[in-house]
Image 1: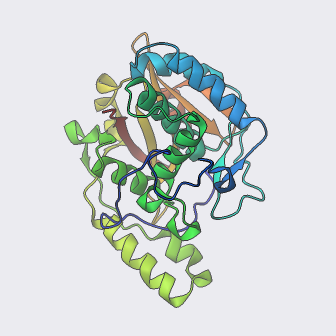
Image 2 (image 1 turned 180 degrees about the vertical axis):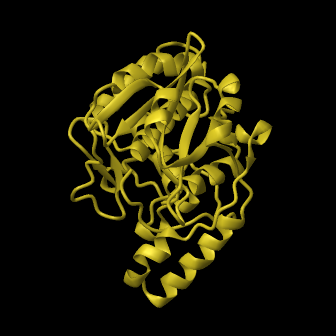
Length: 296
């Protein structure tokens, strides 16, 4: 996973999410396109996947994941973020890095859930999807510029957990994660203003002290019997000051736990790689974090 840019977790910066159509700031045409950076035919690709999911007529996350994940197989690695302004939400279904893949997949299935459950009937599902991307990417659930971007992955998951959108599977039989998180200020702090550096240090301190659970590498077998298709997995980094170095989506196939992830090593999105095989070739991991999405 490429180096992450700044910001860290804080429970104090939380807010609800408003579906397009209920937002007081929405313009009269109902369009948010000016806030998007859409790569290639990503809108068309989203609508294809969204319609496949919605046309099932019911929402069952594990079956939906089995049906949708194959469409991502072998897509090229990359973010597509060139020329994307800091206040625009990047939407890209033509290539992914590990984080944008997980973000986009969660936003896709959550959008399908919102329509199938009747939580929204907004006429443009793409705009609901883009707002769901903002929920996982930005403090407060809205893109107000780069200073609001969440860049520590465990931070984004903890905010979602606080908002009851995921739960940490490691609470069941994992162990507390204890590590000083300061990678950004230590490696990029010289480029920060004095005020921003002080804010970052404070946020990293909160992230370091916030309760979290994971499976150390020697205990990953404790997770395997609990694994469910659609789990979000992240791989703890041994690197000093950094929380995780990679992430992906889990599938359980005939009792075997598989990993779908955007890989810089293979330069593509790898579909259902054996998790044990992946762990065996990665020598710089400290363990795994696992979160299970909640839909309600």
